[in-house]
Image 1 (cartoon, rainbow, N blue to C red):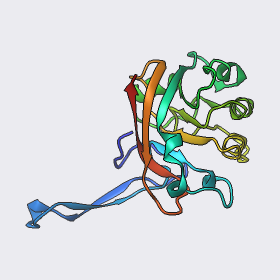
Image 2: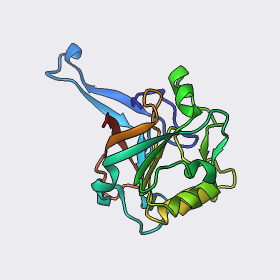
Image 3: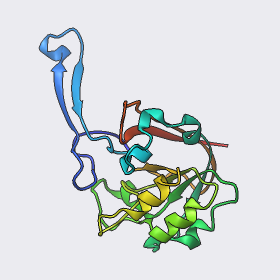
Image 4: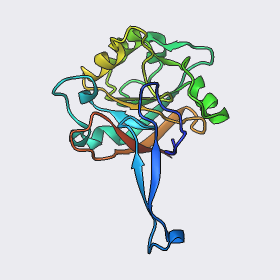
Length: 202
């Protein structure tokens, strides 16, 4: 996701704010800007520290988990939540999976936040955590839609060492095999970090 003022953000998260510090058109020798945004802005990585006290922070993550062979798995249109049946479609021995849902076409059609996004269900998270997957991504600003505020999906995944990649835009990435390149900002002690995530055809 392109980071810019006015971009969609998860409810309660800080909005993106930018301000000029130096500008050539004001007589300065160079351009320089101040940017303010949350640690979970746009496309970002959730490390264990996001929900687990004492968990690994973003700067301590194994970049080998975030980079390498990856499967994009289509979720059927009309699916409200990704459950065990969708998890069962992940090829055996997959270690990185990105779920491409109806969210992607909605992002492509407009940039406003929508709260009825397709998310991973608690039972889907438990099923996923029992596989070889070590990184799961989704085309929503959160992998979880939880009205209880207990966040069972995040706890089930991060508690089993499964990293989470959120805020993906997958409209142009058909289901199949790719190489994932994902480098989160190296925020010391970060509870999350925006990243540039790129899929390369294999």
